Image (cartoon, each protein chain N blue to C red):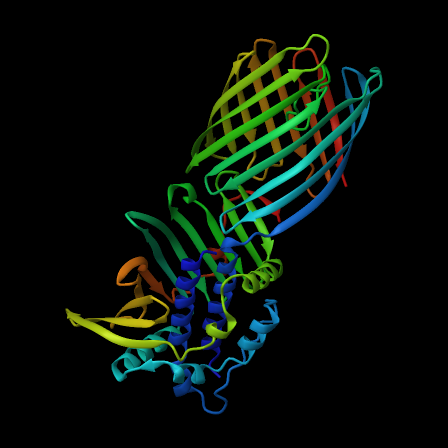
Amino acid sequence: MTNSTSRFLHLLFIALLLLSAPVLAAETEAPTNITLKLPELKLSDELEQEVSHFDFDAALAEVHMDDDAAYVVSQINQAISELQDLAADVELVEIRGERQEVVALKFSASLAHKVIRMEFSKPSALKGQIYVADQKAMEVRMYLPVSNQIAVQRIENISNEAASALNVTDLDINTLFDFSRYEVALVDSIEDSGVVTYTLRLSGFENQVQYVEVRSDTFIPHKVVVCENDTVVGSVTFANVVLDQNLSAETITKLPAAKEVRL
Amino acid sequence: MNVVRVGVSKLAVFLLVLWCLGGQEALAVSLKGDMLFGYGTGGWQAGLGLTQETVRTIGFFGYEKTGIIGYLTLDDNVDTISSWIGGHKQVSVGNIGYTLEVFVANTQRPVLSTFMDNVAPHVGAYGEYSRMYGEYGHGLSGTAQLYVDENGGLDYIIQPYLQLRRGGTWRFSAQLGTSFGIGLTYLEPSETLKLDLAYKEEGFSAYGLLDVPNEPMSIGAGWNGDRLQGFVRYYF
């Protein structure tokens, strides 16, 4: 994984955690500490320990946030907290000088069934490729159009690889769980036909800044723009977002009839 | 405790862990063998095959197979042992795939696991490039064989092809080079049944291979005008 991708994902991860946290303070009565048990995923010992002792409230308290930003974040969090499933067209753009790398895919996920699906439409070389992760079956399935085959991999094998990956990449465990450097601010709000579009600014990771756009009718983030030194280096856009349509596990995991190859 | 919140957080960690694999490689190594029992132009035959293959995932998007395949067969009415030993590398990523293969043999390059033994000893190379566009695709494959017996000589074949995926995979190919012809290959979606038909200067050829469902076994037959082979292959 490249440094820029790592940082980009790091920020996205932090954003996800930030957006997940505030509702806990409002809804939890007794224990504010949440234990994230990931029995199936064998992370590195250090990361496993950090994750298992992770405290959302403590992490959130470290983040600098003004009242306006806190309001928007809490609204986002509330919208997400009730989420059962989600489907969206996702477009990832990475800008390298004058070149733009665009990856477009249909994304769907169900928290109830613990399945994720990504169906690629761009770039042309990946069109038709489908990726399904099923946490209940503990399998990841990848449909390859060129060979018309489905490659099946066990998640525990993947997680072992990931654990070693986390050990060797530039992800620093100490900084990954240090939230004191992060700051969230509401930088813009535009009203149009009764719907307000808010823009949150997330900063604190070296020279990267992330802008998250969210509309008041859904409070589901629909665009994330990543900047480095005031230059846009990438974006993630969510379009045609459909929430809670009771997606079945079969709908999400359905793949073309093809030979399965176990890796 | 907010269960849904934990679910979202777990999903975030899960996605992060999965995404970390984008630049990583998962590796699987396998060693398989098979026994062949058949009947051909040289009478009853028995054979043994060994395949060592390493599968390496390429990020989220594909995999690479590298390996060595070797076959030995002995025919009842033929004094020499027929053999085919090759190393290969196959890469499949999204809509693009390629294969490279080098081999040493005294049989024809296998078509659907069928080995015809009327060929002089040779070293050879095979390459293939494939590109799909939805249901349609095209590709190019090429084979070159350098004979190492006293007569020597070189055979080469280039096969451009078009591919259609409807109720299986249909491949229409032209054969150019030291031999000219046309061909049609069919792969049933689950690849249980494979057929290969060709009409060349040397005549008509037909091959078929059927994997027996839920059994480590396949049944195949090949006919290329003057030679015939039917076999059962048992995998272990």
